[in-house]
Length: 242
Image (cartoon, rainbow, N blue to C red; front, side):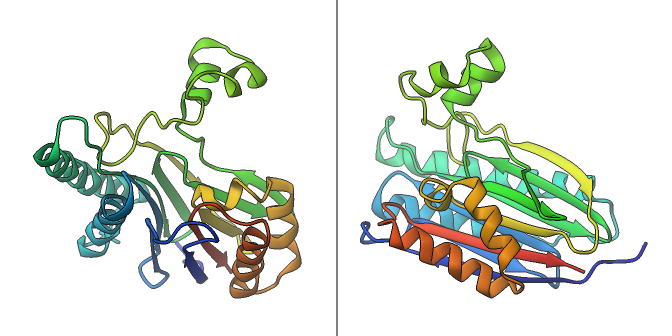
């Protein structure tokens, strides 16, 4: 199995409104692993949660002699343990406290790719000029669409439509996963919702198509977010496969 060569660039910015950064990222092209985590819980709690997620991924040994499915199993176990630790930490404060984080993890092994996510941090793929969102946001609105057949507009106007239905550290940690194959020329973009809240998918696609280098693409996406007065932290990772 011929391995693809991957290059990447990552950014993690506070944004234009918040005074602290609750996002965290990891980019390990040599190991074929990238992740974005977006903390929740406010101030130090959100920062602690996202850093805990990223640290747990950095501390694990990703087995390269197994297929992507096995790697995703290992990542799931590690994040499950992290989730339990965050729940225990929150309960030390109060029963109502949440110390949680979204996560989206991408692993590339040979020509295979695996994605595991919980929450609304996203992974996109640009292939032959076409952008596809590879993840589905775990929000109340999307649950209403998927589980109860709501139409888009009704779901978006529902109470707590943007509330997360799962996350690391939430009472329910139920990550989703998918597997696929990569092709030379594929470009992937991982991001926290600080990007896609203010930059629509068509414009993300335009930037990813226009910029040849991962760094230039990530920088332009960040600049667009900041120009639109990014109210949230913004994390972006662009990964190119060749």
